[in-house]
Image (cartoon, rainbow over all chains, first blue to last red; front, top):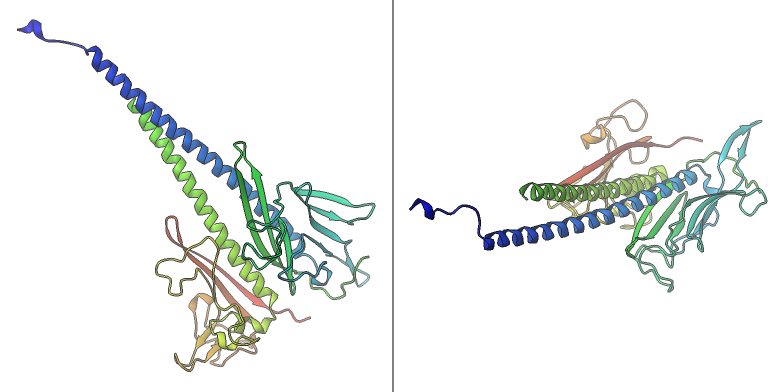
Length: 205
Length: 170
């Protein structure tokens, strides 16, 4: 009965194997696509987080070098300002402290920019834009006269400053629309104390 | 087929690990940032008010009982570790000890006893002598430890920041 031994696969077996292979490949490809999208969204969020932290650090370092009496406006909780003027000590000249021209860090709402400037509003004003992704209001806040996000501030903008003695409390929300239309936000906050406590502060202007 | 499936599995695993790492980095940044903010707030206080404001005794707060921030703080986005006694992730450790009992508490700034993480015993008043007095009103150097302990993605995690604060006479 040797002649009855069969080698190879039937058509049905081949079709079944090919169908199973196709199903597995579709599933795996779908999972890979989904994972790739999640990773890309994650990377975008991480990039935005890093940018927000970097901008906040830059703002912090700038204000840290200032004299607390030079901070304008003197805004206290629950109100906040979206700009801050300050002056730093440049050193001593003939025994007198030399103060810098006023510097300002502010939010340009229309362009959604945070910028640093020296000599604000003067002819020789210089501006440096630090980011162009600022949200109109801090995350969770809407302009309605109350504190919506529970941070103790009312209607604070995407960049907000409050003063507490010699310390400045600052928060920043960046917002970016991804290619697929989803919006990602990153909110960071910090406190810095003005370190430049030399005597004899006076306004340069 | 098998190779393809295994390769896809490895890729997915790598992506998941990357996601976990990013979350861990986010947690770490939140903890670092919160600790840094606490240290900045400490720096902003009158030097001799730091201890009454930031010790765990609410009765000695300069503006009235319970008005100071106290020794514990929360960090948004971080959950306390399961074995955390007060359920709050952040803690400010100062060289203070309760020399009274649980009912009649007497918190003192001491040079001779206290938390070893702060380097105690050590001179805090600047007289080069380690004694057994309360230095609450004459400490010249204040060691501070800010600890953030939370229940992270991969189990309990802790970050500690140690510094010393002093006042510059001007």
